[in-house]
Length: 237
Image (cartoon, rainbow, N blue to C red):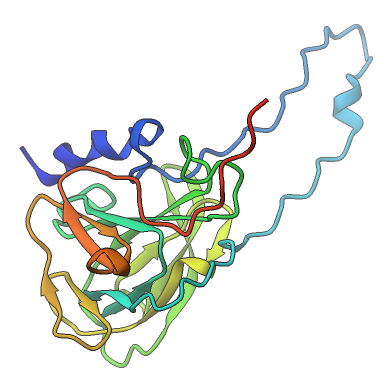
């Protein structure tokens, strides 16, 4: 069984364990009820101008976590410095057929109502499609891409380097972290502060954790409730 087939069901089960998941669902626009045509009479909705689309914006700002070390995904020309709470899973081929190094990184906006308490509240996902570092590439720039008939924004390194595919309606990483040019390797590793990067164990997910409990990250085969800082749950009735 492939890595993607093992992890995909886990990423879809956020309601049970707040693990990694598909990008936040997009609420469809309401559809006007059908109006029977009588002669040349037009439906009211036909004369109403469509509301302008909301322009893309960045992910919400993050919340500072005192003394939390810098945790970075490094490889394929990328250094992705992550802010907690985060999780990441390797999803071979899911975004690009045949690419065995595709990643999904999940991050929670702790200011969202119910974040960390249930379901997808405050949860955002970024898909990473890795490629070799293009010659002379120095920055990740936003580009519009189309997949399955939908247009979204990706942060791409150079003309054909690694892509960070953002959720719908998002054009920057905001509080999730920083994307920088990193080592041009053909594997993913994890670096804490300036320590030597460590291998990512096979068939595991990356999790943020509380440095006071032993370290800023850990690896597990299952999605887990990520380390905060979480806002308190809303008061009961």
